[in-house]
Image 1 (cartoon, one colour):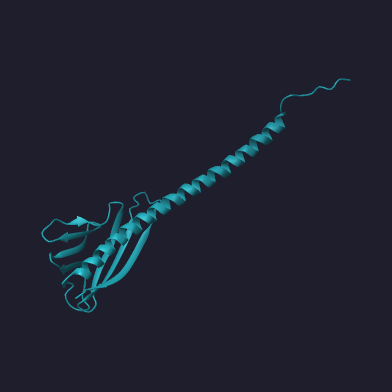
Image 2 (cartoon, rainbow, N blue to C red):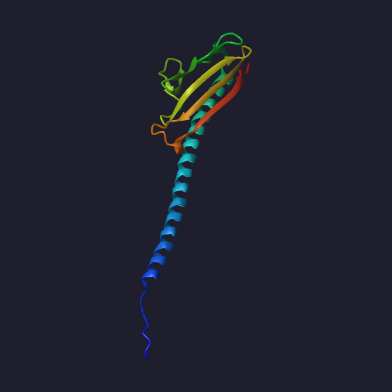
Length: 162
């Protein structure tokens, strides 16, 4: 009796191999998708943080170098914009979702990019020489996808250096 040796795969072996490969591909794809989503979330958070930090630094530096505070004028007063006396007057305000600075007679310039939206900017005069600054910055997410959700609320204070 002769033995017949097969040089190919049986149908069962082929189905098992295909199933193992499909599971490996699905697992790898899931891992890659999660890595991409994490990268997108990190980019949104980084952009939001950079814009908020830049605006806060610019505002606190302007207060520290100012000769006086015009608005909010009296202790305890709150305002949605800040006007300070410096060699040239400087104003900070929230305009169409952007934090803007207006120096002297120059046109207002946005401190935040179009990738984020400033939803709150409040100044409180603490004692006629110190200002409390509160701001909330959100990442623009018109699609509503959760990986693009990023929001940052900052609070700081700065005093005149007289």
